[in-house]
Amino acid sequence: MSRKLPLISSSSSLEIRNLEDLGQIVRNQRAAAKLRIDDAAALCYVSSDLLSRLENGRPVTLDKLLKVLDGLGLRMLVMPVCDAVLLKPELEALRAGHKPSGDLCNTSGRDV
Image 1 (cartoon, rainbow, N blue to C red):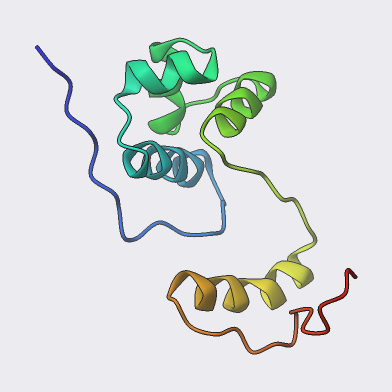
Image 2 (image 1 turned 45 degrees about the vertical axis):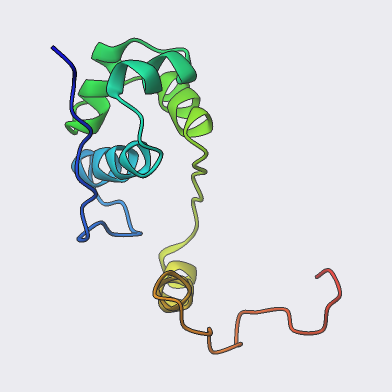
C-alpha cells in the first residue's frame, strides 16, 4: 500500500510555542517537497518512526530534530520575544508576496 502525502496546512504559524507547532511546520515542509514520510526520513538520516513522532508533536532529541530540519531545508532561529514581535509582520508580508515595510530590510545593497 502506497503512503499518501500530507496536505499542506494553511494555518501554519511562523512562531513555535509548542511541539505541535513545530511538527506542523516540519509536516508542511515535507508536503511542499512532495516527500513521503519514509523518503523524508531517509533523506534526514532518521527513522520514519522518529519523523512521525516529531510531526505529531511528540518529543524527540535535539540532535535528531536538527538533522530533520537540516534535511528538509529548514532553519531554527531563536531570538528574544521583543525582536520576534518586530520581525513577524515582515516575514508574514514576505510569505504573502507583499513588499515588506523596509524597516528591517537592507535596501542599500551593502552587507549589514
